[in-house]
Length: 228
View (cartoon, rainbow, N blue to C red):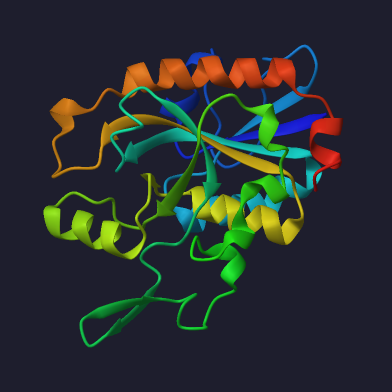
């Protein structure tokens, strides 16, 4: 099976790659005996992620997005690896006289791309039994939360487990392209007023890369094509 492993930054795949990393185009890294694996560095954020997936995803059987995330839920602490079941563009919306209304709830965006609707469950596109890590709800933001005001706003509107800057773009692109996909994320920090001293990126990435190898060693083609 041809698998495209997508990350926003080179840091998030550094332990897999010993040669200079190419940005914006898939490049082969043989980390699986069972599958052909290519890596793609998109750049940070939903727009570059969606653009590069639209360019290259059709050439692959399965899209695996990996990276770090912030956690809103103490159940998923620093170092924990999770799979994203549902996601949303958390800051796509309308300010209605001080009340945030998501584009989905305003009727301006397909509800498949918002966690306000169960249809986005990734189990419709990828066999949920292929991972042993917890499934969580996420939001994707253009500006990472770093103050009590923004954190409380996201909790009130979405009540998410984790926050990233790309996962909803992976959902959006792969659903439209009818591609099986999975967003696998490791918690590098709790979502709190910005304090980089509390972040543990290397610990999170070590655990993430372990789970990637476990996943690649345990899946086969039938895991995906019987569920999409």
